[in-house]
Image 1 (cartoon, helix red, strand yellow):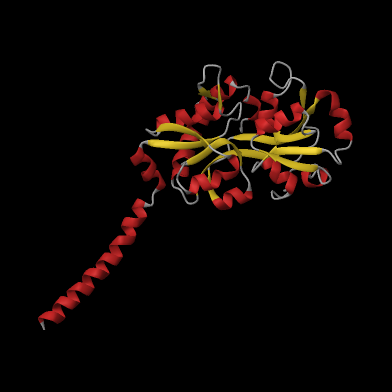
Image 2 (image 1 turned 60 degrees about the vertical axis):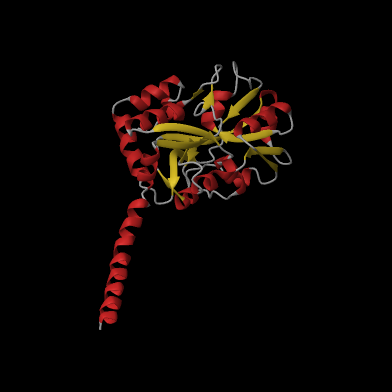
Length: 278
């Protein structure tokens, strides 16, 4: 009899444990709690002026850099920036090497399926960059030319068709560049360098980066940005792990900063007032 009572007690204890554990697991699965407990938000970036880049003194600056620091301060966190390979951004995120991607990232349907993404905060589009003295020649016919874009970027996705046209474009990038020889680059900056050196005829990069980095007074003053072809409208967002409750926390602070003028103040320092979302 005593053995039977002990067996029943053991079974009841195991059943209670089974009920309690899911609740404990749910709490420990909070991405926000995980990050708060660390006290640091690890942010994956690439060098992408004017969003994240180093000034002449080696200090990391940029619109996204400054915005992330302000948001983290409001959440009682320290912002830690780590350079990543953009093509491996989702692997870095899911392995918890980083906690978010905050680096001029365009929101796409595929990325929304694989990650939790903040409210959009800035407009963007894809621009063609060519040597200024070849602009008319190249844009008249791109067939047979060497084309480059950053691996894993929205530009590459539009060129290859892995990012589908959505009706916001006047010209399909996949069709426009169908007869080009496409060669991916490690970064948008390297894509510009390929055009400058002549190893590529043209590059497709984010307009935000192109306008800031190309033309008179820049390191690419012999290049020109062309946006005559509308390859589609994009918006920028901040990516977290799929299902992350950190996204909600970030969204609250972003809305506060949009309302109190902080967004506009930071944007003005980098000439980005015209592309902020209303």
